[in-house]
Length: 471
Image (cartoon, rainbow, N blue to C red):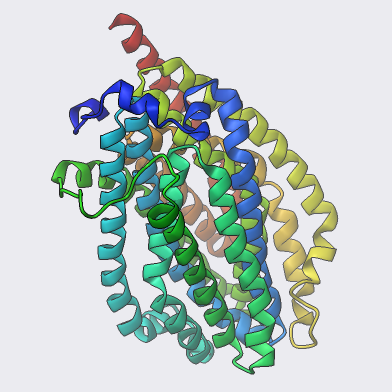
């Protein structure tokens, strides 16, 4: 279903009257759009990755058990953030496509639908995650660190409504090309979290609960700022208004058509983390979980530039698709992969050389010093992961931006469940490589999955271009 088929109602004149700088960039040269939209997103996500890293660093001072307890919550938190990011991708795709087709009224309507949807979903999540957290954590194999995991998770998940609302607002801003304002909001959240962590963890003596409260308070503060931009200052291109909101099942379906598959992609990543945690417990104990989940924060930090580019590809591809300028999608995809691979190669080299120093972030206390060799093994193995990540990430972004979320989900399923999970099991258990087998399984699965995604995206874009030329 195209944008024009689901409620295009604004005139081109009305669209042009309210065009912002971000929208102009979005509709222009795709290479320029990728660069200008990615920059602020990369800075903002780096700050977010720093505060995620800061959480782990401060918690590491409480010992390996605290790290492991927080680590068992990590895949559940990934589900929450994945759902919010997935629904956000759906909102970005639909709003950007309507902007591309010069449908201002449709863009406003889709954005309001997205906010309403986020509130409804967060209410359901709050009930499920808070009420059933302990049995879930016990099922995951937390064992002696169950209480620490529940203490941390029950607080974090109370703030689920803030996480979803903020991610949806970020998605709307990205859809209109306003990544700079998104950067300001994300920076505020990150800096506030970094400040609150040591105060609440050690100063107030709250331990892992302090880390959880720091996260919730910082994201709640951003809700206030974003609310001011949309409802008081009102200088965004997209207008949010409940007074003019008219529920439209087609719009909800359009958002969910991309958002649910994208959320399931994140869920699959969480499932793989859970599977890998279980394998690590089996072959090396809970210390291996502490290494993997804490080290994975470094991996997430390292791929932040790639994530920033990927979010921009969604917006650029969506706008180009809405405008039926399919050649721009090809240019954006190839350009993003070129600069992404260059960034990933540099990241791999730096990570390999600096692995011993990075390890000290998590092993500075006597309680965690024995984990040094395991951390170095993890970081140096992940150097093989980075160069192939852009292939899969940016190809998925193309499918999400053009409204083909199900295709993106299929590719992600192949990468995570068929390739990564199976390779991790075979190498760690069948071939007896232990925790190193899990890490090499992640690398092998990513290489194969990324290659499949890239080929699929190139074929898809080629068909779009041929269809556009014949039409």
